Length: 68
Image 1 (cartoon, rainbow, N blue to C red):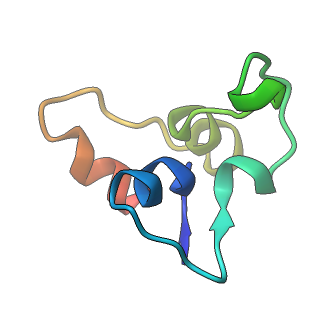
Image 2 (image 1 turned 180 degrees about the vertical axis):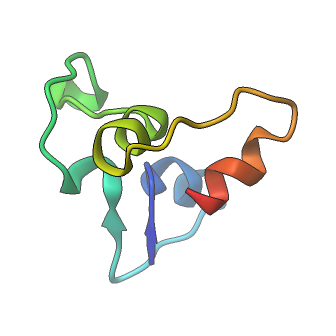
């Protein structure tokens, strides 16, 4: 399973998965103040810095997040 901050989604669904790749932990970054003292970038920040893609801030944002 691959996604961004999956631990929150899995916890909300009361699910567990043996293999999880969390994109908030995969890439190096200089953001501070994350969960448990670990720095975790937002999906928007990762898209901009890694992909050069700026996510739209619109009512249909969840669709853009899923595509990203």
